[in-house]
Image 1 (cartoon, rainbow, N blue to C red):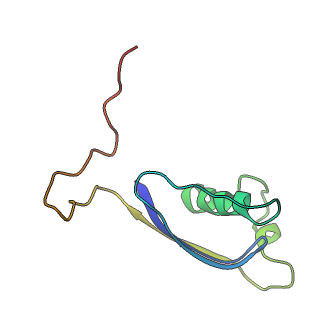
Image 2: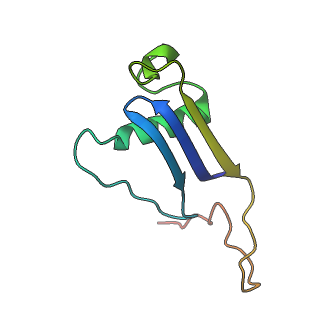
Amino acid sequence: MILQSLNILNYRNIREASLEFAPKLNCFVGFNGQGKTNVLDAIYLLSFTKSAFTSQDSLNITHGEQMAMVQGTYITSPQPSPQGREPAPLNPPSRGI
């Protein structure tokens, strides 16, 4: 499965964010305390239904807010390319050493 998009509302220090991901490589760059790790934790929460940092869901809600939301879209199979070429496999074959 590939995460295609992520919407976050009131999750930790992220008031609101909508992210679209590239199919292969994505990077998060920013100064300390801007929420890079919290985006990764939101992805973890979406994938495993729990935070990697706390067992209490209420601790992930932005201070002073009533609720938080993490919503995402996964694709389960590669989409054909616009040029009509065959899509690359999700799990490329491993190479021996």
